Image (cartoon, rainbow, N blue to C red; front, side, top):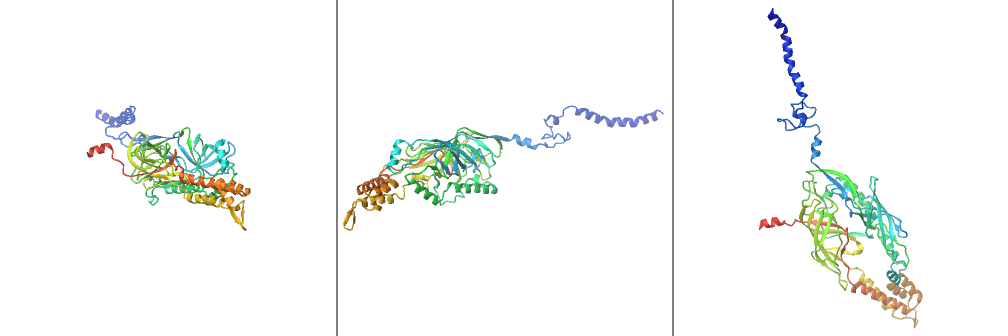
Length: 500
């Protein structure tokens, strides 16, 4: 009987025996486990997911949290002094202060490695100041037959409208306008595609097509046709004319205060090559921080430029961000001299310094530059800059001398000397000395002595200015766009000592 009662309670004992471990396990879950505290388990190299069983080693369900820890924040700022290259797309008369000027940004502006102001952005501003013509210049202008000498002026740009419609208020200091800018290269025969910036080659095809479309539109703005240039040339010879800012006039608008475009992030892998030297045969874009002139520069004078576009490696990793410094020096400078001997200037770049202070030795030379056509600059194969004389100086001087000589000869017609001389000769002699106004005055006066005086004045002025006066200096203004080509970098001092 006792045995029967024991067997009767056997199922209950077995049920209690199997139910005890789950109860114990439940009580243990009330305590924090290594997985729950985030410290990991000895057998698990990674933290389990929150929804995983305690004994499973499963990676976290939020892998982006791990990547976020390796990303580096990068501030997208444009410092004060950063220039915006703007070209006017509308004709503006210089008559009243406050007149609106309108143009386009023709070169993308980078902060670190990101475009913050794309090419094609609209820029609006106003005529800030119109100066009175000094008395000396007015007298000289009148003497040369120009009764409306141009006023010095200044403009400011205060708003930039991005392609997406966003408007940015800016404060700028604007350089004098350049009517026509030309791009000079030292090796025009080279294949420029081979020496193109690697950053440009890495752009996707769609982005490149859009960029080309913008540049084509800008080219139409900044390159007036030959007929328009001829018209401007003829109008400039009139004694009375209005002053305009023509479409295609270039300005550099330097920011007076910094612009903040927020913060982005880059991975450590993307920044692994930051501060290294650019690959050989690469071409980078920069701008001068200070003016360099052959009139004042001497050998060894420092030259500092700043990158305007980032430089990438062939595998699209950043090497040099925008605003990196290029440090070089003047290695040849010759000031202009009398007898129309022009100046010359040559610079090289020997070091690159990033914002973090990392310095790399390089060997860079000037391979391209954008300057005002009126400067008459030329680059030789070694990157040296020279000014050139006008190709028409012999023709213009010969014409002036011929007019003076013909005007001094009496006009004999029907056996008698004409006291007034030939009308066409009088007009030509007067125009050679005092332009259109001198030609009209000499034609109407019918005076041979007056025509001779105008002709002699024109001939002597032409001879002096074209052959006897001081030549032209080579001047690289502040913020001049440069293209710098690189060869093999110079060895570091440590490497040179190691070879010894």
